[in-house]
Image (cartoon, rainbow, N blue to C red; front, side, top):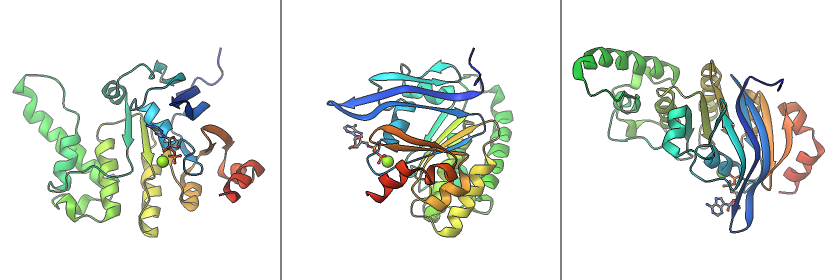
Length: 248
Ligand code: ADP
Ligand code: MG
């Protein structure tokens, strides 16, 4: 019996080959419940491709991805979202002409019921949920503002909020603080620490200060493989990691 039964995500021997080029090559890692895992590595290491594989955007050529025991590599993208995996891309995809409230409301997962009788009750539930999420993402005072008028950082938070309202058990963020001010980066770190109750987060990030602020564990990727893994303290003193970063 496995000793590590608390895994939310188990990636084992994951491989994808694009015309013979292995962008991800036999990668294995495990993410615990409540953990913030950061994936770092030089450009082209395969980090974004790993997220593409987990969310079903790219089909694996080998290996396995188990999420709460369910094999994801054979599931369609929408089914993976439904299973509880949320993924934020590098560029925010919010509706600029709609308000912050409307953006969050639109992302609220509606049931498939065709009966209208529950509509009123559901609206009250939606409003409460939108307000709660707005507080988490520092946008309580901007609910009626057009999303297009938000700062770059606020747009990123809004998109995180649009994922949170779907209550994913695993949230994946690709370079969430790129282009943010130092103050916004600090607030984003606080945001991520707030949202890990009952959930796990995988973050790809280059900003080492931000990584130090948020990571429980760090996975370093290089040429599609895992180069090193552990606490930030451990990986940043790993000679293999130092060599790869100095070589770039
Ligand atoms: P990272 O996010 O670590 O910078 P990526 O995962 O984006 O790296 O890319 C890893 C490698 O895989 C790169 O060499 C990239 O060009 C290649 N790659 C990514 N997606 C595809 C694809 N769909 N088809 C062909 N090559 C790809
Ligand atoms: Mg990338």
